[in-house]
Length: 116
Length: 111
Image (cartoon, rainbow over all chains, first blue to last red; front, side, top):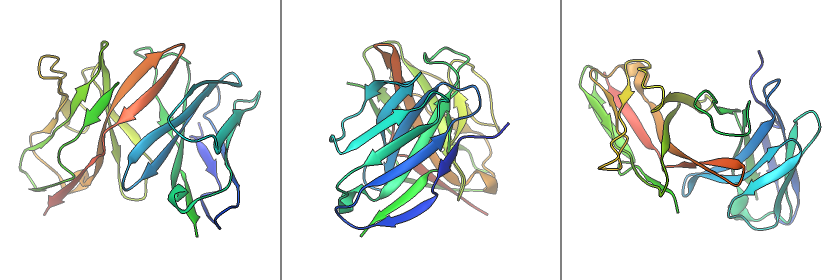
């Protein structure tokens, strides 16, 4: 079955603009989470959604937001972009909302965002 | 708060030599730990998890609660093992979960 799909793969934005990234989880997966990956900070948790509800949020400013649709697809939005938002944004999905021993988190290839 | 530490940013070994990628964690609850690998130009993928106690591609990792460590080991490194390796800890609570990652170790296997 298809893996986690993220679009767009690459994009360039200017400071002050806003951006929307999309993630389609593996079919049947209801939990979607987002991570930011940068050379300096590594992989950092942004937020997690399950059944259209944000259940957990990382330590990021309110400019970072997201949502999940009824088909489990998710979007994240970053408003008023700053140079420091340049990063690889990873989406991950899992079948269950809880971390049981049989549950695995699968990652997409990511969306490369460059802010100039 | 939970924390994962990978002390080595870069580890270079010769092909056929043993490999040990270090990971230490800090977590107040019962930890569930993972190793993820990211090969060049590929997505992050799960290598192994301590609960399953399995060996993947010759890699093993044992959870040592006394030393709060989860080091990744392989007896004989192969060139195809060159990649970024991330140790991660699951933090569950309030009906949700999140992964806390270490900064990663780049493994370079020299032919």
